[in-house]
Image (cartoon, rainbow, N blue to C red; front, side, top):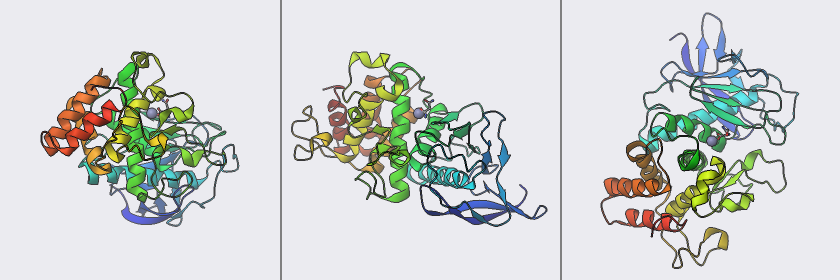
Length: 348
Ligand code: ASN
Ligand code: ZN
């Protein structure tokens, strides 16, 4: 390593003021947006400056250890070509994802062995998406056009969790396995947002964790999330319940029933709650087991039982086995798993 680990101050767009792991380079007298406390060779953030090529782009450096301006970059904002603020959000989202995997799930980084991650911001022009790539072990982030900069905690947690899946179950990105791959990313994206902010965000638009993805990048008023885990069909496309047709739909929609099963597993379902949070498939409702236990069950299923072509039935069996391994046979956790899958039409 060259340079000394430092703690910078970040002024993010989506997460307020944050502390960032940075590096002071004595010989160049600059700070780098590289975090030696996470990632064997330092997790780092790079500027693609609206390009789409080049393995990494330019590493962010700064004269001071204060980064970004905290502005709200609406989609289509072209005044921030090299804007550091997107880099702050990218660095922060990676940090909290890294810490969630370490502290909640006992996993060392994305690949399990602490391999460093590159975050590439300002990908393309008005690019309205974000994506993970196995080839570069990196995440690429657009500035958005219809959406705001795609650098929120839930979206970064989603993309980085594709890297976790790629180094564990390796769920193939089509059919039911692809839907489970997407669900793994949505589930962990939400859990990471809760981990970072606590649980006060149930109401869309308020600060805190919630069971939607992408509510912060919406430019609508009130905000319209990209996906709803508690009731996937609220997006107008995704099914709430499994069916045999599911294997033929887009993986970002086929993820719906698994997302909802996970919501029930964590939060339960009660006939007394608003109908969006309930299903007639669970006429008496069910008890949830909370985020941490649900997270550990899903993660054990992903790392010990699911394989590249697993589908929904396999996911149910995997979660039952994982719950038994972690919490004992016939316990409340195992029961919650059976109920949660039953609530989306998988198993009895
Ligand atoms: N943001 C999308 C995802 O992570 C990008 C894609 O469809 N590949 O699933
Ligand atoms: Zn995805």
